[in-house]
Image 1: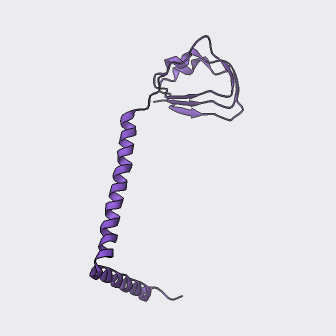
Image 2 (image 1 turned 120 degrees about the vertical axis):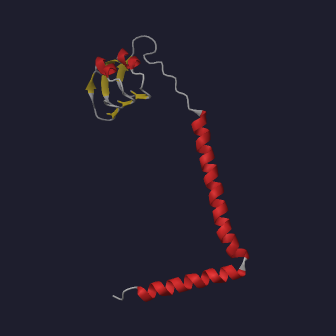
Image 3 (image 1 turned 90 degrees about the horizontal axis):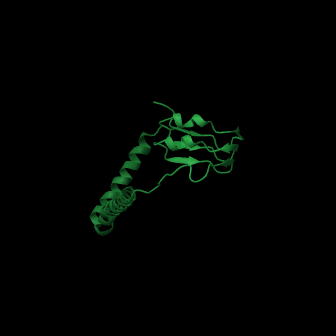
Length: 133
């Protein structure tokens, strides 16, 4: 167990990022943006295999020749498809439910009258049991 994420953005931090930041093996999220950090970006970031988000923008940092981190960020298409199908099924479910209730009331006069009689009686019962202030 250890620190998994930290967000110290917009805190006017100064100085250097510690070189031993790579010792935090379970670190997943780091945001140090919009500070006044300077110096080299530590090479130890490359040893953080669990790191999925790193933001160091708007600082005075420099890297040492080439890419400090080689992170491939790919959006998982199956997650996107899953979310799309979730919203599609929600829309279909809502439409079917809505029209099964409202459509039956719209097209079946006896059901419509029975429904509104039920609402009237429920409202009367509610008002009859309500305390008078």
